[in-house]
Length: 255
Ligand code: NAP
Image 1: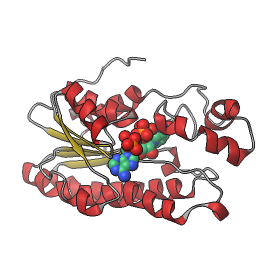
Image 2: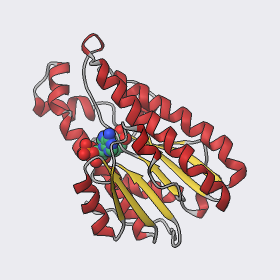
Image 3: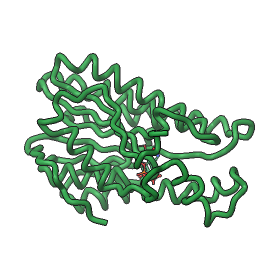
Image 4: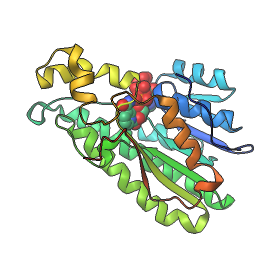
């Protein structure tokens, strides 16, 4: 699906860094911000996919493992738009939840965003302008069973985003979360088998019975729709939106 680019956004002269830009939502965000004129730095664990994304949009690619916090600290600091997007999911009941995966998810999805915010804010403060968009989730605000690490991390990211908003406001920096329900990406495809196991249902029923069960709109969201919301948060009319969590969930959290 190709979503119309409706947001009037000019990021000429701005640099945007997108984590997890090799795939899914991150890739759509990188494409959208590049279409607005930004010089995009595509960061991903898989350098090959980062390069693919960067080549397609005329950006720069960096292969980095965000669970390696020294590698995070070494990323470029001259950034005007930061999209904290990289993430992963592990589905397992709490008694079986692997502690090393819990730690990994907090590192990639909370500690790395913290390090990146800390890294780029001085440049944003110097320029008197910056946009931080954190790709959170409905799971930043509510929980689902079998996702202890992910729900914990997304709730943490929400807190980081709000503190960043309060500190950044006097310097022209906004910070917001974007909160999708299930988006059509590899992250969703990869959890179908584990969801089937954890819930005791066939894989063929996972999308309808688990992923779309709470949504009023019974469709997966497209990554381009999330990217368009990210573009809006970087646009002039959104300059008063900060410390917010913007749901894009088809009514998932309306219950
Ligand atoms: P995706 O297609 O799997 O993309 C995630 C990207 O993050 C991948 O390119 C992945 O690289 C990268 N990544 C994972 N671990 C990393 C690490 N240690 N260092 C650097 N990069 C790493 O997933 P997505 O659905 O687009 O998810 C993007 C964000 O949206 C995540 O924060 C996710 O929680 C959030 N989100 C997704 C949904 C959904 O339904 N899809 C809903 C709500 C929120 P590899 O592929 O090489 O591992």
